[in-house]
Every structure is written in structure tokens, then in C-alpha cells.
Length: 112
Image 1: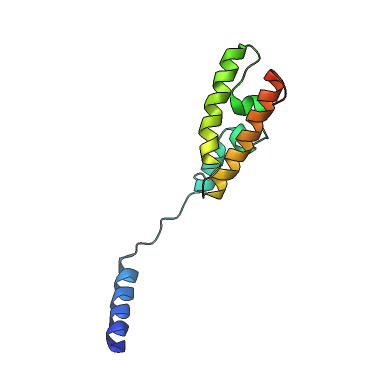
Image 2: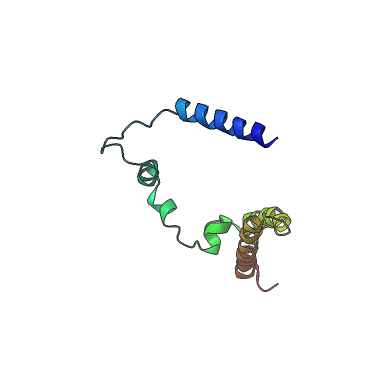
């Protein structure tokens, strides 16, 4: 069995080495893919500044109380479900949003 594995590995490694084309040389003008992506990304996406609770919840100063209440209700339903997720990143985002929702509710409707 060892001989079979040896011969298989020789045949596969030899075939892959012969088939693999060499990458073409890049010109200095092209740059790397990472540089292209960084140049095309907006400045806001590159330096993610912490957003205020109003921005996170999508609440503007001109919104009436009923619209704010409906927006907070919708966001609470959405992120309360995610708060019990097994995915740590999703759970962390949900916790951050729930904190922002509580802050907005206390600001606009008083203490809970």
C-alpha cells in the first residue's frame, strides 16, 4: 500500500508542476490587488469611525415620535433575535445595536 501512495504522490506532483503556468510579470503601473481595492474604497469604509446611536438606528431629528417608535420597534425585533446567535460577530453587533436602541428610547421617550 505504501508503494501505491508513493507512486500516486509522484504522479500527481509531477503532473501539477508541469501544468502550472508561471504568473506573468506585473508592470509597475498595475499594483497589487490590495492596493486597487484600497484606492477604490471610500474613505469612510477604510477608517470606520464609531457611529452615534442616532446613525446606527437611522433616526433623524425631523422624525415624528410615532415614526421613531416604529423604527425602534422594528430594529429591536431584528436585533433581539440575533442576540442569541451562536456566531460571536453577529451576537456582538446585535448587542451594540440593542444598546443604541435603548439609548434612543430613553432619549426620546424617557426612562424605561
